[in-house]
Amino acid sequence: MPGVTPTMGRRRLGGVLKALREKASLTNDQARKKSGVSTGKLSRLETGHNVVYAKDVRALLDAYDAPPEVRHKVLQLAALAEEHGWWEEFDDVLPAGLDLYLSIEQAAASLLVFGTSVVHGLLQTEDYTRAWIRAADPGSPNAELERLVSLRMKRQELLSRETDPLSLWAIFDEAVLRRRIGAADTMRTQVEHLLAMSERPNITIQILPFEAGAHAAASGPFTLVEFAEPTDPEIGYVDCAAGNVYPEKPAQVRRMKTKFHHLTSSALTPEKSLLFIRKIAKELA
Image: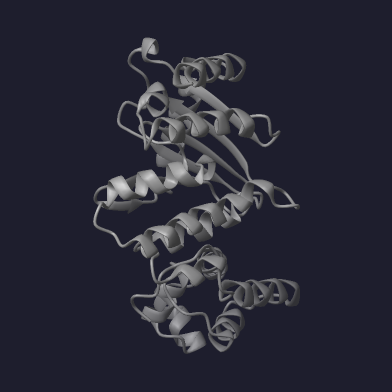
């Protein structure tokens, strides 16, 4: 079904089905002949772009001679792939393509983030979020803006979930703290919020000061997503004017990870970063 947006569940299932097909040494056409699943549908299933039907998955498992224990796990994964995400309640305002990122973020164990102009959404206060969205789209109706604010606040529950809260390591360029978003008290509250969030064991914040000069990620902000499951490879995320990009080839991910490690060395240590943030908070008082 062309046009179906991939979710993390579908991507996971697709990766497993592709691995099983390759293990069976079958081409797409050979898999079609053995399973009765068209090559087009198979291709879309393997890339996460198809609605998942159990009968198709069973037919493919038969074609790949999957053992019982593998069949059970894959069929469980197929059922999970079609579960609705919490973000679907915001379909009326959800930006195009964001549902894929939210499903990836929901499944993540940790995020490595480099930001250059704005506080990461998971660390924003309501007023800061409201001011940022209003600046980005001055003509949006108030009701729509408030729905987007609620969406962002809902995302933040990942950081405090009871089981395996999301780990976040954020490196912010000094410009993130210097750029005034909203009124003075909005910015001050946001900076104080960063201090409070940094006290959580699953959150690390570093500041890359202007005096650090040129650095490894001068090309712009990015996110690296890591998963608990060893079968889920790391994936990158870059939000740009042309749309969301997901670098996932091993070489691409390695380059992004290398950049992040260089940034951790160029930035102030977490301890010194907190002192720097406190200094900014006093300046805003």
